[in-house]
Image (cartoon, rainbow, N blue to C red; front, side, top):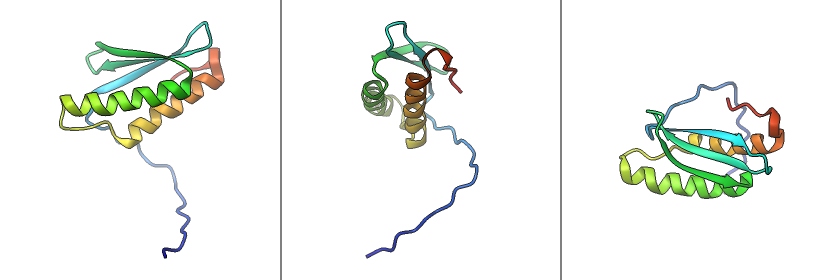
Length: 100
């Protein structure tokens, strides 16, 4: 059996994937969160709106399936986790939210 290990992590650089998408996240007046998926040419692809947790699940599944069909490079785990953390942050901060 493997022994447990603690890895201390210092600041690490962001590594861009080759998915060629970015997201815009906004708080809606009804308290839901909206995620807009855009191409790097600022063209809208699809939008999702609902509770942050549900948007995260559906959007990441959609991104994983759609992007892998269009390019040879899938959305990275780092990119997916970033989107999830930003959705949760938006839901917590509501009107004060500014996407990094």
